[in-house]
Image (cartoon, rainbow, N blue to C red; front, top):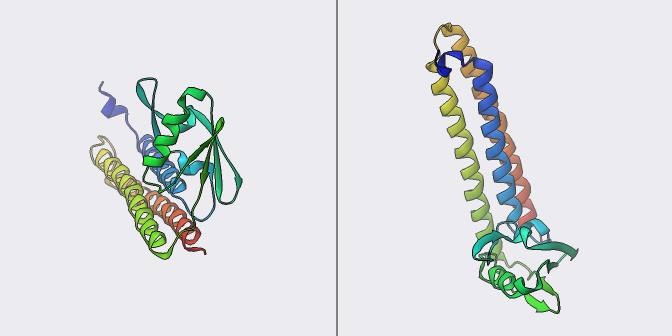
Length: 189
């Protein structure tokens, strides 16, 4: 008996919800890495550092704290990686100017000018759209699986598609909420 035959509507819905959860979390993580007016350790989560012969996430090489609203402190666990971490932060597209100070790296956040805010809003919209696309993709995949089910009535498939659309709309709404929140945070002066 092939696995496609044992697939049920609840299983398809569960798989779809799981895929949509991943897409939403990814979108939230990406949005969190975009800098607004306030310092947040999550801003540096997307930075990768060339260390130990490979590209590693910054959070695996150092701790990041935000002691003040306009300052991040990066404390490398291996002091030998300080220069590489500083270079990765400087070369990221976040527009930051880190400075090594003894065993730590100070990352002051410049105030955002109006043009930079508008640019960041565009980036945030693009990231949110990527999240929406991933959610729509999960819905399409689940819908295709629903249509391929054997020994299931058309009515059950129709109900499944309605539930799928409702799930899709819920997740799109959550991405839109995260987008509105982030946009307001960026535009707040």
